Amino acid sequence: MRPTFMAFEIQKRTLQMSQKCIDIVGNNISNIKTPGYTRQRVDLYAEYISGQPNVGWNSPNQTLSIAGQGVNSYGVSQIRDIYIDKRYRSNVATEAETEKMTQILSDIEDVLDDFENDGLQYFTQQFFNSLQKYSEEKPDSKDIATVVVNNAKNLCNLLNVYSGEISEIEKTYTTELSDTLDYINNMVAEMNKLNQRIEREKFHYNEEYGPNELYDEMNLYIDELATYGNISVTQHENGKFSVEMGGITLLDGVHDKTNRILMKDYDVYGQADLYWESGEDLVLESGSIKGYVDMINGNGVYATGHQNGYHGIAYFKSAIDEFARTLANTFNNANGGYEDEYRNMFSADEEGALITAANIHVSDTWLQDPTMIGMVRKFDPMTGLYNYGYDEIIDEVTGEVTLQNSNVLYLISQFDNHDLTFGTAHDFSGSIYEYISFISDRLAETISYESSRHETAVTTVDTLLDARDEISAPDFNEEGINMMNYQKWFSASSRLTTTIDDMLDKLINGTGRVGL
Image (cartoon, rainbow, N blue to C red):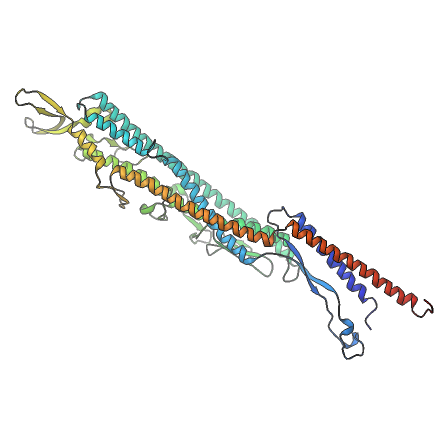
C-alpha cells in the first residue's frame, strides 16, 4: 500500500505549480509594455519515482502503488524562435543601411536640388543667354559685357556654395560616424559587464535555464547592435553571449573581452578608414555603419585608397569639381588661355592651384576688362608681335570699320561641344548641358534605387517583427485565457486536497468504529 500522505505531497506540488503558473502569467501581463520583454512559461513534466520493490506491494505489477506522482517543473523558460531572431537581425541591418544611405543622398539632393529652375542648369543657361545677347552687340559694348561677367560670377558662386554645402554634409556625417563608433564601443563594454552578471546568476540555475530578465536585457543590446552591422550571436553553456560583426569577434563571452572599432583621423586621410582594435580592417555586408562608409567613401570612378565605387558624397563632390574644372578649361582655352594666361576667363583662388568647385572664380583680368572676351588675337606686321584687339571688317569702298563679335560667338559654340570629357577617369563625355543632366539623373537614380531597397527591407523587417511578437510578446487575450485556466487548475487542486483530507479523516477517526 502507498504511503498515506503521498496524496498530500502530490497535491502540494500541484498547488505550487498552478500557483507558479499564475505568477508567471501575472508577470507576463505586468510586462506587456516593457521593451524587449520575452514571454515566459513554466515548463511542466509528469513527476515519477523509480519503481523499486521496497515501495510497492506484492503484486504482479510492482509499480502500481507509485504511479501518479503528479506534476513538477523543470524551470521557467522564455518563448523565442532563434531562426526568426536571426532573420530579423539580418534584415534590420539592411534596413538601417539603406535608411542611412537614403538619408545622406537626400541631403545631397537638397544641395543640388532643382538643377533646371534655380540650380546649376539655370545659372549655366543665364551665362549662355548673356553671351548670346553680347554676341548680338558690338564687342566693345561694356555694359552688356559686364552682364556676362556678373552671370559668370553667379555661376562660380553657385559652384562655391555647392562645394561648401557638400563639404558640410561630409563633415556632419563623418562626425556622426565617429560618434556612432564611440557609442557602439561603450555599448559593447556594457554588454561585457552584463555577461559577467549573467554568469554569476546562471550558477543558480540548471543547464537549460537562466536569468530570463538579464537575457532580455542582453537581447535588447543585440537587436540594437544588429542595426549597425551584420552580426552573428553565440550563447555559451555558462549563459554568456559572444557576438561577431563582419566575421570578427566584437564581444568575447568566453574570455570577457571586447574588440573596439576605430577610425583613422579623417582630416588627415580624407577617407572613412575603419579598423578593429585587433588590427583587421572593418568589412561589413550591411548595417548603418556600412551605409555611412559607402556614402562617405563612395567616389564612383574616382575612387582611390579605401574609397569605393558607390555614388556618395565623395562622388558628387568630385562631379561638381569636374564640372567647374571642365567649364574653366573649356572657356579658358577657347579664349586663348592656353597661349596666354591673361586670356583666362576663370581661375583658382591661388595661382597654379587645380581649379575646383570650391575655388573657381572669374579671373582678375576679365573682371578688370569685361570686353576682354570680345577681343581676338591679331598679328601686328609693324612690330612682328601678336596683340589682342577687336575683330574688324573694313569696307574696301567706303573704308568704314565694322567690329565683329566672332570670339564671343566661338565661346557660345562651346556649349554645344559634345566632345568634352568630364573627369580623368572618363566618367562622362558630352556637352556641358548633357553633363548637368547626367549628374542630375545619376543622383535621382541612386536615390530611387536605395529608396526601393529601403522600402523592401522595411516591409520584410515589419513582417519578421510581427512574427517574432506573435511568438515572444505577451498578449492580453492569450494571457487572460491562461490565467483563467490556471485559476481553475488551482481551484480543482484545492478541492482535491479537501477530498483527500476527508478520506484521511475517515481512515484515522472512523476506521474500526462500529456504526460510524
